[in-house]
Image (tube, rainbow, N blue to C red; front, side, top):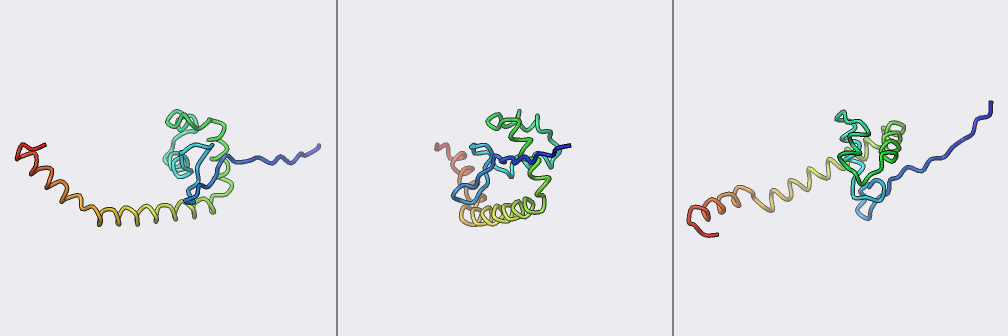
Length: 111
């Protein structure tokens, strides 16, 4: 039996902010793997994100399963960044103040 080694190019690319995108789209690796880890099939993910070809979703899932430790480290880093940005935005833009102003405006009849 002859074994042929095949090299597959995974359709992912980091943008200038360090976010990994799939298939030359704006769909992130976080999104695809998050849906997969939530129990979605590749077909369900493709239906939800039609800009990503089904074959690319399978390729990305396969990459994740082969490189789980590395990808999970990246995903944890992204989650940490998201929490930090959310906290910074909540501090900068206090939503309760906005809500209070909107209620006061509605009560006064101003638009």
